[in-house]
Image (cartoon, rainbow, N blue to C red; front, side, top):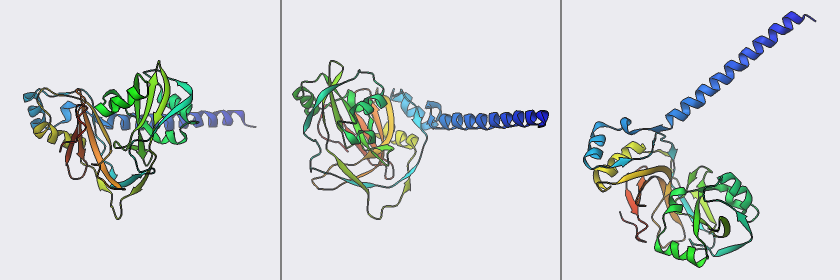
Length: 265
């Protein structure tokens, strides 16, 4: 065997591997950098309005504009709020937890929990009826998770509530849902989050507000019907708990507040 030649082949192979790994790292870093925008990326007119109204932006602005269809969904038991189920063995948890560990711990009790995503904003703010459910459960608070559409986009209308006490999950409420694509619904490119933000600061968000979170998911007004429709929407959460949903295609705006049970358009 020609050891010198074999040595050169190995050297070239390692160099090629390093080049491939380096290129992949560069791609990953570039994609990560492209997933969000900052205040300076907004148009001058939007920046001007925000300064005039003293509206603060405390988070990054997502730059993604995927093509998504509307969906229809229905609750398997006909109710949006399921009955409370007490866990036989309390699951250890902490107020700041690793979501993956919690999901793995709850899989035996809630098999489909892997298709849910934790929502820090919804967990922090509660309406009167949600607060009553927490008290009824004898809990100190709750974690909120949303069912995922295509295992990626949270359906904000749906909530899996995990009740905790003394850093343990003691019970939960869940109403299983069935999600399907709306009939003959074509995928359409989303409005950029920066455009949705422009609409909100000019027409809806009060002066002196602070925007703490922007997230893409699905949302739709709930009607007295067996099936509901939800559209891809940008959700903007303010520091006071108010949430503004901007429909990603039409630009329609819906506001929800922890101070009231009703939605405002």
